[in-house]
Length: 338
Image (cartoon, rainbow, N blue to C red; front, side, top):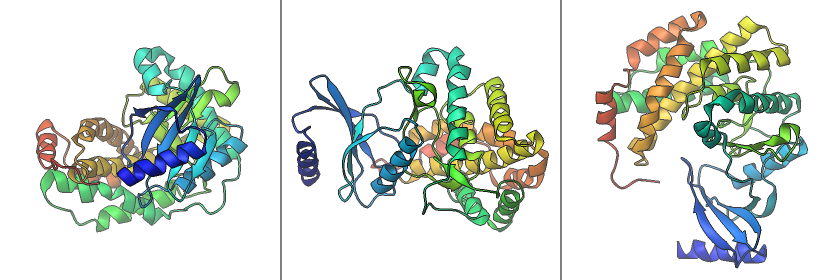
């Protein structure tokens, strides 16, 4: 840690911010750390993304430049040392959608409409080259986290995944395996900032997009409207789905199936991720989000096209009762592993 502190100070000094006041900012589920820097009246944000982690700072840099080229509002990159995983970023402020909506839920449609329009604009452009492009089977295996981690944490057993994986693969191929677009993957209220001083789509500040890849048009829409961290009203969800489908020229019924399939896949993956964050990383706070994700999963599985998957999930995944969540929490290590 002492060597890392020296590297950071050297980086900041070279960028002209070596004497800045530094204050830790809240992080997320990754190994990245953030600090807000203040130098006189100017501010910036340090992203400390140590080499060897799951996230590649070069990917963040590349996607940020792509988004800026589309006249959107990711943070500008003021300085970078990608070999050391250090980036100095424009400070976009603190007006996260999540905080604004907690203070005034009536603003939901006002904020979500331009966020949906950002997705539509983003998907009209050619994605940058070289992005990962997962197959339907790959997406199914990601959904299998629900068996590997959630079911295992709840029951102590890992179910045979064969039928589950085959069914998710078939659903993805049938309903969500068409033309690919750039997806940002974590497009939700804690990664979106409101920038009212800017115009048009630039009013939506974008964060946490380093895992951007090729994916399905509805994926980021699901991420936004079926948020694991906050309840989006059903009216807002329906309105925004219709807004997206109409603007994209999609058939409403087919898009509803597309959306439900992606929603089920994403909810299954997140159930597993949240259980893993407890069991491996010692972060039991994510267990509190599981009931919301479970409810989203049930709504998606209620679509008639997913009847077979619904039956399999009912047989393999126990509902997250308070007793089950408490039992999982008791398995969290006291000393987190990273």
